Image: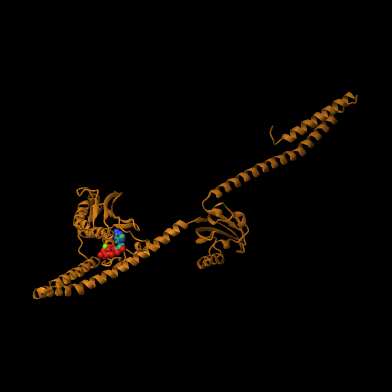
Length: 436
Ligand SMILES: Nc1ncnc2c1ncn2[C@@H]1O[C@H](COP(=O)(O)OP(=O)(O)OP(=O)(O)O)[C@@H](O)[C@H]1O
Ligand SMILES: [Mg+2]
């Protein structure tokens, strides 16, 4: 039955039946019925009932409408809660005094605090009151800004700090009085730490570059100031050697020392720029084979076996200065040999990873401490009595010129692996690239 008329119809029908029954018993009682009056009475009563019960009908409709809306509102709240509770970001709301009046589940995950213990407390006790944050907040309130964003550090219940990216919206009344605020906080700790790490390593790279530049200048100066007189000294000593045949042993030592000075100078010269480098297509495996052949005698003398799983004719083109590349690998393999006074094996392997050649030089030597690893690329850092500490500095400089990079994995007492990455040389692609 149509709900709009339900009560009216039911009551009217009941009233009509009542009147008819009343008329019937009236008639049975032998009373004379006044039809016009009775009809008028019936119509008036029914109309009255119809009108009054109309209100009841409307009231009923209103109540059921209200129930329906309440159910809808309840469902909506539930849905909203479900959504906010599943959000990764904190959703918050404060009143006009800054007391927290709403938080979602992300709050607990991000700060470690239970929602209930924080509701009603001041919003500003949960983040690091850095000067910049305080200034930002006071300027926002002073200038009646209605929205904004700030990165701050939330104070976790366990004492650690969590980086949060806060987006907020503030409400003010007509008198510009703050009436409350809502907002979200996203956890950006990982991104922030990665950024800080990047900045730190950039600083390190910059420092390294500065050191290299200084080393380069020193090298250029030394080369200029020392090499020429050294050549004269060498020449005159050669002449004197013939005059003192009985002192050949002294002269041998002097010449070997001069040779060493000359070697150190030439090492330093690699750091001094500009240098004549000649980039050309180089076959990586052929070049490695040459370096290994060169160092084999050295290795055998130290009871070391150089192992290479590749063949010299294997494909492996790179764009490089062949001499610098040789120097790079000589320095690394020499270091590996020097790290294994007791002998052992050195593995020199290559692998194509994406568009790079990864060359690994793995030794079974004494390894390095974490502390030393931080310093190995510093010019003049050496743990060897005879070392100049320029080998790896030069390697890093060479790799930089070749758009390559290197990293090191080392364990004390177990050995060290240097991984060198160099871009694969794809002639056709590169030439097309140059043309465009
Ligand atoms: N394979 C390795 N195993 C252990 N330590 C190493 C290895 N390679 C390098 N190192 C450490 O790094 C330091 C720096 O190496 P680097 O080649 O720059 O200088 P160096 O070998 O001491 O001297 P040189 O200039 O004669 O090469 C070494 O003194 C050594 O302590
Ligand atoms: Mg070295």
